[in-house]
Length: 179
Ligand SMILES: NC(=O)c1ccc[n+]([C@@H]2O[C@H](COP(=O)([O-])OP(=O)(O)OC[C@H]3O[C@@H](n4cnc5c(N)ncnc54)[C@H](OP(=O)(O)O)[C@@H]3O)[C@@H](O)[C@H]2O)c1
Image 1 (cartoon, rainbow, N blue to C red):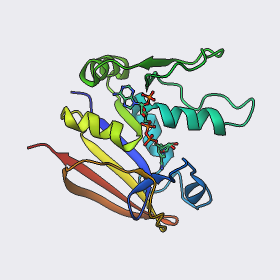
Image 2: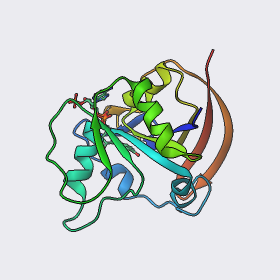
Image 3: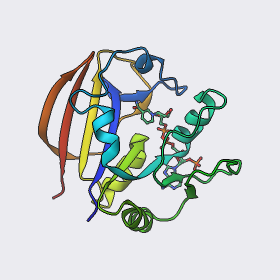
Image 4: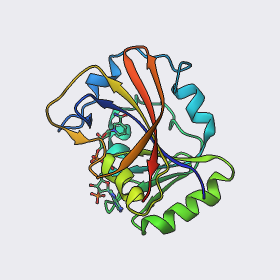
């Protein structure tokens, strides 16, 4: 089974974006992409990506004009919305097929690499519902928001496998324990 990881940043109180999908609380902070559990080490391990419609919309809204799509691996966008067709040559696929079916396609695409669930939290939870989420890597920012888009609105038992300090963040790796 292809290793599937939810890799994300969160506030201390468990939100990955504000109620209106702002990431200002995150983007202003210092981290070391080459440091423990950093992005530069993580990304080369990934062979396929999944994200929800709001995350995709955030990328559309916040990518500076002319900046290319940030990923080179096949990416599945879970949505019921109709997004404009892409005019670049990137591999972005829109789907609302059942999670296990899409996971199987993602596994084929990923080969011997891993699957990254970018977010949101409920989408990661849907993979967990099907015991298709193996690992969670969170970078906890030193901030609380009080409300927002949830990190992972599920009851899951986890095992802590790595803890580190990266820039302003506490980075923690968890194995998802499936009963
Ligand atoms: N802090 C971080 O590192 C980080 C990481 C990732 C994302 N984010 C941010 O966090 C926020 C996440 O937003 P969100 O909580 O709304 O989650 P999301 O997963 O980005 O978007 C949720 C939407 O995805 C669609 N969707 C989810 N599951 C689906 C399924 N099985 N089939 C078809 N469509 C499905 C639905 O939209 P429709 O049915 O309307 O299409 C749903 O309303 C965004 O602002 C994003 O930018 C932050």
